[in-house]
Image (cartoon, rainbow, N blue to C red):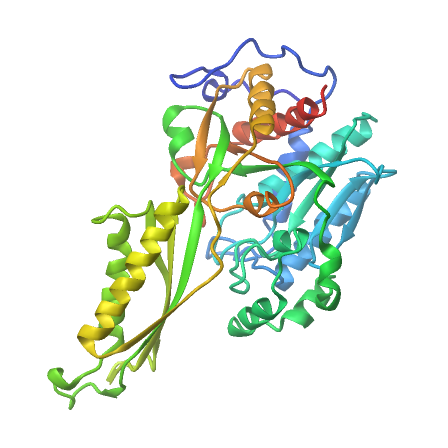
Length: 440
């Protein structure tokens, strides 16, 4: 099915490149656009909150498990085979797949943040399954085996151990840390994983050996405003942001809000507010990193007439350069030490494992760009300001990423939206990127 005649899709704005559509395409191979859009609508029902907007389908929740099983059932109807590994990752192959061939792995994740959108992650998974279906039904033989995957708990909203599924794929899951993180989030990890089809006791078996994946390609909505602002339908990602997360505990002294004089207070929340501003200032006033955010803050006892005695919060800093991430982390920990000394309040920070900035690989970028050009789609190289499973998979395989525009740059929110024409264009680009990588 062809892309609708949308001027925003078929134009060539400044900064984009294109050439006559159709040049170098494999005739007769195309995605089923109606099927792609229908599957996205169907999966959006899992975790939807009628009347409230948004989707809550967190990692290893009943909603994510139901969505995974639903998609597996649809893939079976399409003649594909499915498998859920020990990390509850859904793996989709063609029937009779050659397990001796290197794999071109395609996918993303099905989990969402709380009150998130319908496309983040899910779009890449559904498009990946569609590409595998098209190649299987056309009986296309390639030197590589196309395989789709839906990773578990990429967001870390179900329990604060993001990229659980892709870490398992690369053999990097810290079972003890993941278990503690899940318990902190109120999720019994072992039982939840078993209910989703996984097995914590044999999680090591989910790991793929280096060299088994020829390339990993992830199609995703941009989650930012760049492509829409420039009127370009395809982004060729050249690097993915790095991220440092610090869990910060501010320990003050609980007291009566009416009878404790201001000079004698050890108000944990007042100091935590200064921590929040310090995180923001890393990016705004000091320019040490691209962005700084405090997205979680819990005050105890959280009662109107009681001075908070303890606050726990999470700070996240992101940048494309590892040296800037390190500098921002050092600056923040230094500021925490100064705040603690000045206020007499204990401030402890624990740094989670750092996600390093990750470049994509040149052959993948070339294949994506060539596919877009052959389809008549303007494209541009760009940086990803969001983290993705791709940067985890990069430990064992070459990676590439394709972006499509996000309306007004909105993501992780109920208003997340991408025009159907752009969704179709991205899936077509993914299909022809696989063929390019395979030498077709």
